Image 1: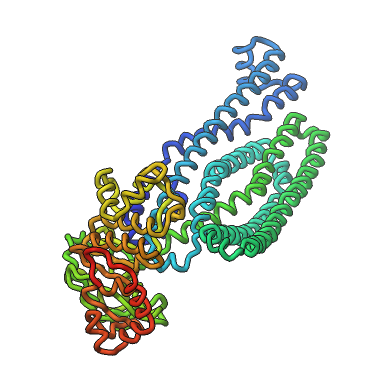
Image 2: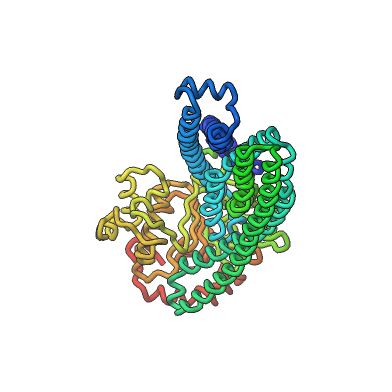
Length: 621
């Protein structure tokens, strides 16, 4: 699949992978599959030859019939004259057939397992690649637990099918065809009697399989829901404990789990009914063959050896049908898993590299919104005819009531979303004309809630510039006022922080996030009030780091604190998705508009609090 799906993998940014089929996955492994297929053919031949040594013993050693000339010559050439040589040849054939069967079975199992594991690895990588490149609009409405199940257990089900069922089905088909040919050659009427129950058998298997597949689909959906509940609860464990909601979360999972049990029992009931139904039909078919075969032997129409071959073939003939009934679980799970994987691969990202997109040049930092409309849903606009201009190197603050669209403005600059109408430009060029990777490589984020990974501190900082040297990492940490506290950690820069950085304080997390932004060296910075929620000392340290970070760069800050607003070159006041005022702090206060109202209700108490706090050297109020 590395070859056959390489192109699809590379173009996953621009188009959904709608046509992934099992044959596409198997094509790169055709050499190994060919060897496995040869092994399967030999496995099928050994199944066909299995009863014949017994027939030779019954008919030509114990019975009165003479062996065919070719068989007699073979026995004489290998073991000498007499019936004893036929017996020895038959016994040796049993060992030889068993040996060929063992080698063929091992080769087939080993190769199919290897192929299944490789396909699982490659398909998982492609799915993970595609999920990461789907737009935020998709992730906003998709449950994380469901995506985890699709990347893990759904692909495991596909691998299980390839490893245990794919060539097994071929073995069964080859065995069936071969045995039917031999049986028709021996006695066509006897064969028809043997096959009398097969139409009923196939009807039962087919109808049951459809019911099982429907039940398996419901079970899989519920598994995804359970994974989402667990993921949501554990990722918010601090909130759960803060509100003492452990019992509530346990009840929530218990409710989902009980529903899962009911669905699983329903699916198991459908599977449980199939196997006894198949066994009953097979027993009826065997009864017909025994009754008819015994009459044929008594009438002298066939030999006891021929009847024994029929009886043994009959067991093997019904075995694939039994196997199919037992394989319905594997087949259903793999079919549902592949269906769910293809559903993701067939999803088109709303935000992707457009045809003809080019690599972005080094940005100067001019940002323009021209008549931009945007809504997370088609029926409700968040931004309406938004126009603003940010000059290169300016520090800009966005203020406004909750829900005014400030975060959306920041998201559109980095193309986390695309506008429904109008354009967002950087240096006079629509951002959609640039490749996403080259665009975002020149934009850095520092968010209100800094998300760190469960990894060493140095790795969290280097996330802003993969491959950064240790000197670069330490320099960024110093500029972010983080070096001193990092050195005091148990293992310094090698200290592994807890998930989402929970083992660090808020101020420490923010400084590492700022170091991550510094090391990237991007000319455009997008900040969602990174000092919110910090104490006065932590805020002072963070602001010192931010001042170094923002120097000479175009900075857009979603402002919730007066100290941030005062540092801004321009303040844009956003209400109902449009800019209603812009200017400096004093100018906007003098106008007595929305900003003045916000100042009275939101910022004045902050100003009074800040007045009581000593201003750090080098800063003015």
